[in-house]
Length: 417
Image (spheres, one colour):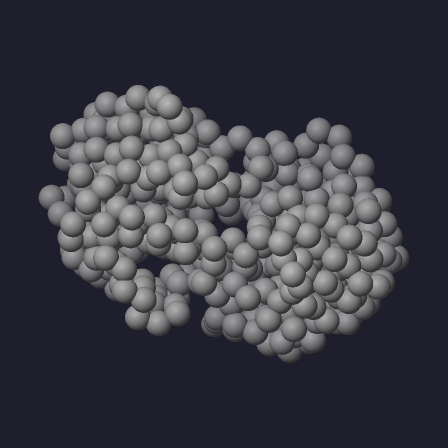
């Protein structure tokens, strides 16, 4: 099993290019199921989850052509198997995103209940209730969701909880439904907007993406299109926090500041100097960062996927900070590992009190999920000595070439077997 070894104490300096967003790429790849024509997707990140999704689509009969490492052509001319088997789904919760498109296009789907990171419950009942409101007959048995519908019909759907994948699944299903579908309390994340723009380029009629009410007027069929994936805002935020924690000076090319407001505001509050351009973000941190309070909430508030990284920043910051996690009930597992490196963190319920220390010390730590992995990498960059991070397969699910990019910025990092 592979590990990362990081020698701390070297400020990050230089520039790198941000990859396409994993959380936008996965649903957009699934959109290929909605049309017989080819969908060409550009700026696709080379990640384990993306590879898994492409493999899942290929198993269903979608033709896959890798035009370049970051450009994929998907042809859904013939769907041979509307089944997402457990073997492919067990490692990735986003596999549930094939349910809506399969049902809308083929009239049936059998999708294994998904797996993924152990950060808390992410129930699929929102997906099921929404599809049932559109006329689907659904039963869950033997670990699979079995769905049928001769043709879905438009409906008004109110989501009890804000769900990104739930919004995306129902939005894709509604594009081929008969009539108008209105999704209320919809997720507002930029990745939802990116999917809506891809679907619109395929001929879908969607309005309101980016607000809490999305309206979809169903059409008889969608056609092929070409779409470029948006930059990954979480990768951008992770590198910015790493630079701030290491007291560095970096520039991120191909990044978008307009989708990172909450993160940038907190970095500025911590003492970082930030400059933004059309497609770049620059950060410089002089001196020790200041501790900042963080409360996660759905977009446009502070993202849960940046909580672990800011816990590291607060661990070495001046003062104390309170971090409150409102999205997932089990997303403080990295706190215990950070304490092994000398952090002073007390967790009670969904709140962590972090008292900043002047230094962290190197240790052997274990990654428990994707973003926890990123936080441990940042901790290793600032710790005194060499830190070893085990179970790094998590990080390969969401960060493209992370050690190469960090090395490009001057980090002393290597992957070992």
